[in-house]
Length: 105
Figure 1 (cartoon, rainbow, N blue to C red):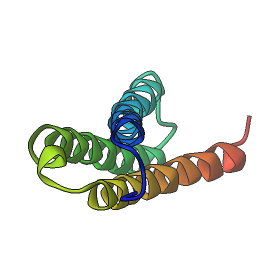
Figure 2 (cartoon, rainbow, N blue to C red):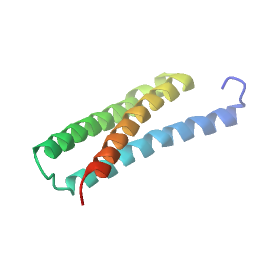
Figure 3 (cartoon, rainbow, N blue to C red):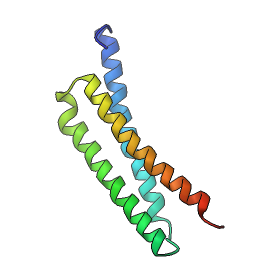
Figure 4 (cartoon, rainbow, N blue to C red):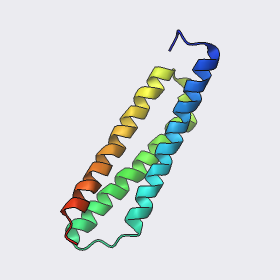
């Protein structure tokens, strides 16, 4: 990162900020999907509740990081934090994918 020109650094930083926004918006999509679904039983209701709470917490953390912390940290720290948030989101998506595969039609 340090070998990049100032213009290249600015592009990478803007792209990373946009990645945070995109992750936040993806969380909205998942929440909307869950809110539009009717759990078929207690197990599904608990799963949806867990996912919903996790996604809301992820959104809150993502928003707070981008609003209050991003500009105080270096690119590598911000990128590492984004990857951590992305890993959480991908884990949730995997759980949802397994649930959809398992659910009888």
